[in-house]
Amino acid sequence: MGAQADALLIESEAKRRLADEYDAAQERGEVVGHGGDRVSKVSGRNLAPATAADLGLSKKQVHEARQIRDAEATQPGIVKQTLDRAIADRREPTRASP
Image (cartoon, rainbow, N blue to C red; front, side):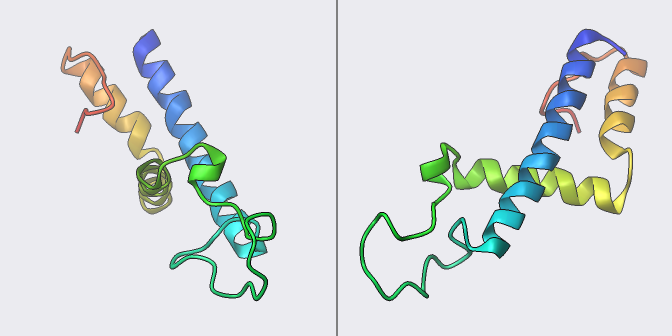
């Protein structure tokens, strides 16, 4: 596997971990869940759970991380297989590789 493919595999593993950690933080109430913070009775920014933006993430980044995690859960090894297929077809692996 080439350096680009190795980097993409590492990135996909990091995104899977991000999705797991973000979802766990939502379950613990540390990050706002879907629909926002509907339980805080005291107004004030300091007391509300963090948002994706507060953590330096976009909703799109969280969504894409969840997609990768869920794809790997459904079909373990799918990311590596996709990268290997691109290399076998003599295509440079990219994030957009099918």
